[in-house]
Amino acid sequence: MKVVLVGYMASGKSSVGRLLANELDVEFIDLDTYIEKEQQKSIDTIFSEKGEIFFRKLENEMLQKVLKEHESILLSTGGGTPCYGNNIETILNNSDHSIYLQLSVSALVERISNEKDQRPLVKDLQDDELPEFIGKHLFERRQYYEQAKHIVGNEKKTVEEVVSEIKELLL
Image 1 (cartoon, one colour):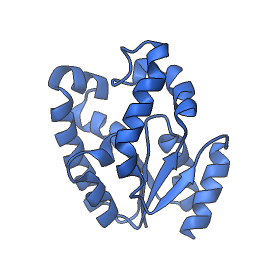
Image 2 (cartoon, one colour; image 1 turned 180 degrees about the horizontal axis):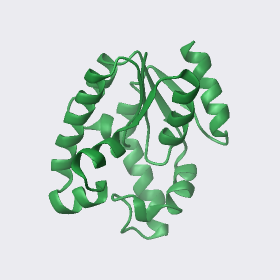
Image 3 (cartoon, helix red, strand yellow; image 1 turned 90 degrees about the horizontal axis):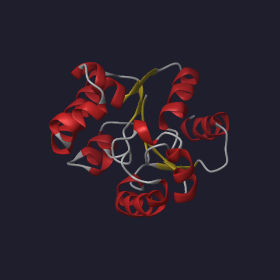
């Protein structure tokens, strides 16, 4: 079974993915971590040295590679992954289940403000700039996220509750 998690940064894709993969007894891959290992550089470094266009091309190649090489996997994508090139089609055509982990702008702002330094797209923003940036960005990306086979609200739920809800959808 191939399951792909999509959603905005800090929506819980990695946390949910790790636990869900463990419970489903499938390999878990975080696409950003996979890219960092392949390139031997952080996503932040790749962005700053090569730019976003280079990163998005690399991300597309790695997405295709991971989905092609694994029969059974739980893949957590980066927040922008489904929104570039033909990535959403790649996800939909090469997975059994795609799941959008959905959160409100206010919940995303709260999560992201605590980890801005690790997020290349927002690290230079002031806290008071986050709501507008995230709201606009989420509005632009939602059309891609909502193409996922399933939409699971992640608002005010524990990771365990989200995993349980997803398992019911899959089994």
